[in-house]
Structures are given as structure tokens and as C-alpha cells.
Image 1 (cartoon, rainbow, N blue to C red):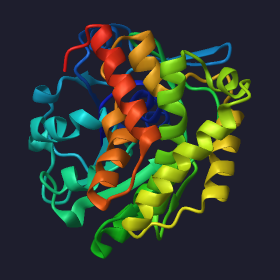
Image 2: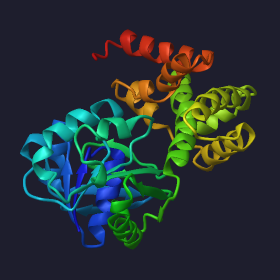
Image 3: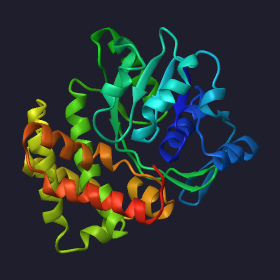
Image 4: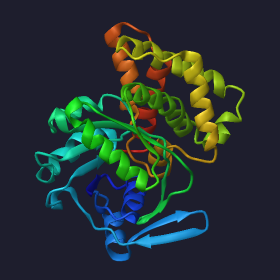
Amino acid sequence: MKIAIAGAGAMGCRFGYMLAKTGNEILLIDEWPAHIEAIQKNGLTAVDGDVRDTIQIPIVRPEEARGQVDLVIAFTKSMKLGEMLGKIKGIIHEDTKVLCLLNGLGHEETMRKYVPEKNIIMGVTIWTAGIIEPGVVRVGGVGSVEIQAIDPSGEKVAHEVVEVMNEAGLCAVYSQNVLFSIWRKACVNGAMNSTCALLDTNLAEFFASNYAEDIVREIVTEFSQVAAKEGITLDIDQTTDYVITASKKVGSHYPSMHQDLVQNHRLTEVDFLNGMVNKKGEKYGINTPYCRLITQMVHTKEQALGIKQ
């Protein structure tokens, strides 16, 4: 399958690497000059523990993407999704499917502006990855992928995408209710990404606190109350347990928002996590004080670091 990875950061590189290893034709698309130069010059290096493996994968800037692909997997930052889809519209043809695996909420609305609904596949993944340096990505651990075509006419191709991912060891399944899983994953990120970024901790260090589980429950409660207004049922007790269990499995991991804000001084996706819950809460008349404060504090930290919008 010809697959373009739109956003070749840590997760995009992980998926691109694993899919390329099983014979798929991969094109990485990104805008980070040092990363592009390193991969073009030296190949993409994947590190798993003490094992390093380098493979040659083409990488281009969005405006340089050419040709027709069967599938685009979107791994941009949430706030860059629309911009990326606009720049690569030349490779999105009549039958090209676009799979969104971004963290956060509301992406299907952005997708519809650039991609026919029959070609949209929404998904969620709990794989993790990290950039060690330009051209080098950490790929340890295990994870899974869950996807669903927005339009029933796209289900057949979506099942084919599941097969391709499973051949690559990505542990994919076809879902009948992916929006539930997207909201539940957003709970994980809303409870863990922003808090670890603000506190400058990894997951294990966060849960070493006596207050961690109470904080998680408060955030999950706000997500659940807003999700209910959108027809998504998230049991507070079950979802809290899910967030805690999932997070503790990868305790040494620094979530992506920590990587962005603390490690690399880049803008975060908080507006599509806690910020989106606060925004939707205001729409529905639901008070979300934890999400509102977290969003304000993350933006305050961005401004203090001089990170430009």
C-alpha cells in the first residue's frame, strides 16, 4: 500500500518505520528542517532498547509531496491538521483515504473541510514514541490502534487498512464506536499530558504523589460530563481506572505535551484536550474548573517561554 505519513514526528516515524518494514511504500511528510535533512542524509533510525535499526524512507516538506497515495495517516499536531491537509491536497485523490490518529477532540470537523466524508477514517492509538534527536526515534513498548470509517461506504477499505497495520505489528482493530475510544483516550491525555507538562514529571513521578489519583478523577469527571452532552457515555469510575492503569504501564514515559512544552519549547495541543472540554462545557452550561485552569496555566507557560502562536 502507498502510504503518506502527514506529520513525521515521533509517532509518525514509528508508524512509518513499522509499515515500511513490511513492504509498504512510505512517504514521510514534515516541516522540521533538521529532521528532514537527517533522514534524507542518514535514513530513519529506530531505537528499541539497545537495538538500533536504520532504514531509508523518503521524506519531503508538505509542498513537495507529489503523486497519488492510497492512504494518508495524519500525525500532525492538532492545531496544524487543517494547514497540513491544505498543503498536501495534491496527493489526496478521489479514492485516497485519510486516517486521523491525532490526540484530542473535534478533528472530524476539520477533516470534513478538506476530505470527502466517504474517505475519512477516524482512529485512536495508544502506541508511544519519542524523538531522541533529528532522524532518530524511540520505538520501545507495545500498543494498539482502533479505527472506523465515518461513512459506511468506507468500511471495506478501512478493514484493509487494519490488515496492513496488523502485518506491521501495530495491533489494529476495526471499531463500531471509535468516538467513544477517542473521548476515552482524550481523558488519558487530558489528565496526564497537561499535568506532567506543568509539573515537569514523567508518569511514574506524577503517580508517586498522594494527590495524583484525585486530580485524575476530577479531570475525568469534567470530560465525562461534557462527553455525555455529545452522546458519549464515559463511566467516571471505569474511565478513571482506565486512565490510571494505562498510564502506569508506561511510567517512565514523558507524555507528548511534556516533550513539546518542557523539552522542546513548542506550542501544545491543550486547546484540543482540556481547552476543548472547557469550550464545550461553556456551550452546554457545564462548569469545568480543572480543565479551564489547566488550559490557562499551559498557555501561561507557553507565553513565559516566549513560544509564538
